Length: 120
Image (cartoon, rainbow, N blue to C red; front, side, top):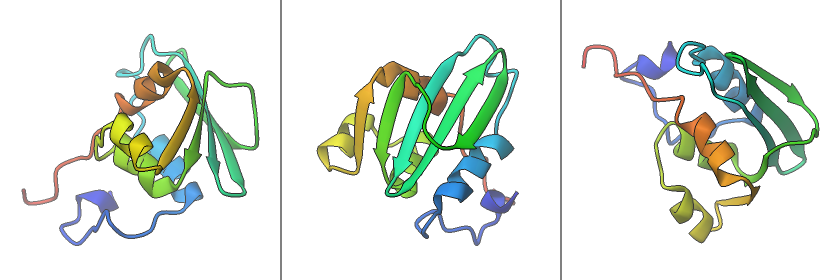
């Protein structure tokens, strides 16, 4: 709900936990129908696994087998998923390092969009 506020500033720091919670809060099972993906995120010392299967999103701390591994900052991942920053550009800048099936990461990114600001 906070991202709709006209005072929400997406340039402010975002924690890894905050990003994972946002994935859960904004998940649309209908939109995810038929999507299957397993993604390992590494944010410094923090590791998180996100899986989507049968319209259900799971996320947990730690390492698991995944289709793709993404290393970088929560802000860079949010830029890709919510801001629709091009993956190639984020990789070129060194903001994200992606190994494995990049299409698996994009399947996650394609499920999300920022809602319009309140009053917009």
